[in-house]
Amino acid sequence: MQYQEIENLKSDFNNHDIHISEPFDYVRKDLFYITLSIDNSSYKLLIDDEYGDFSRTNKLINWYLILAALESYRETEDILEWSKELCIEPSNYLDYYKNLDNVYREIEHLLGKIDAQISSYDYSLRTGVMKALLKEKLD
Image (cartoon, rainbow, N blue to C red; front, side, top):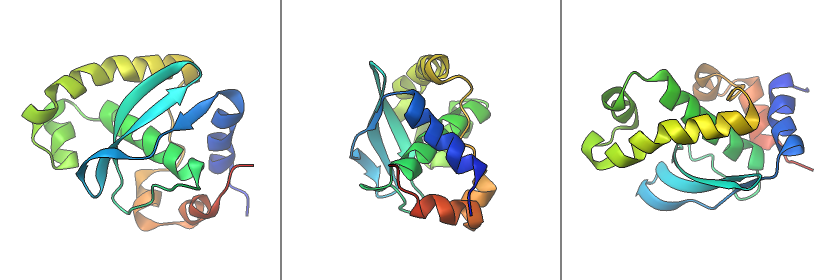
């Protein structure tokens, strides 16, 4: 079955030169940094990978996790709410959080509206679209 959400994620790769590094600087097994390069810009982003989905072979799931992290940041009121969702100490991430607004706006400028396409509900419950995304490969 084809899902429009997955096709929309693929289109970002067709329209931009996107590279995602391997995880580094692990905070925990499920929380780490990656470097995202879009066109000629690079960003260090903190990724919450609750289910261990980050993959060496599936760029689309990695892209989803990045967009979901950016959406999560945008949807929280402040650093206290954001850090509570990630179960981290806010004072340790103050500089990162302060810079995240600029990073978000720059990425949004490059891509247009930031949209992970798949809801956190579908991600958590592993619905059909999420199962399909986990199996997807970019050409």
